[in-house]
Image 1 (tube, rainbow, N blue to C red):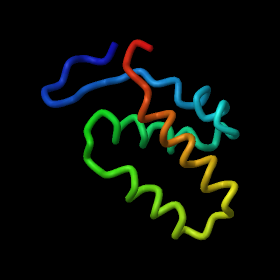
Image 2: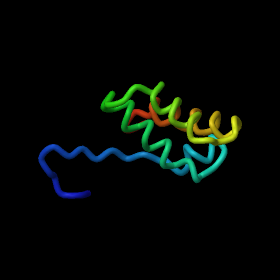
Image 3: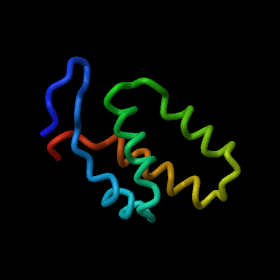
Image 4: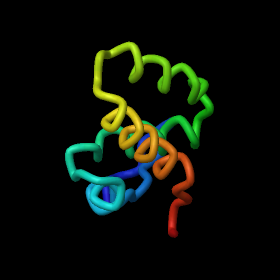
Length: 79
């Protein structure tokens, strides 16, 4: 376990396994982003969805990324 640090929260997240369920392990970063957004409410999910759509990805990839984002947002530590 990492040493305790004030203001730091460490959360275990099986991001790669979760991303694989969404279509590709390369989406682990989007799963992690979703978990962070779900935990902190720092950013509206609709803003991330809009950014993904505006990024020029194919519709199928946008949908996979949105699924990964939602998967991360649903994650609860210890689950």
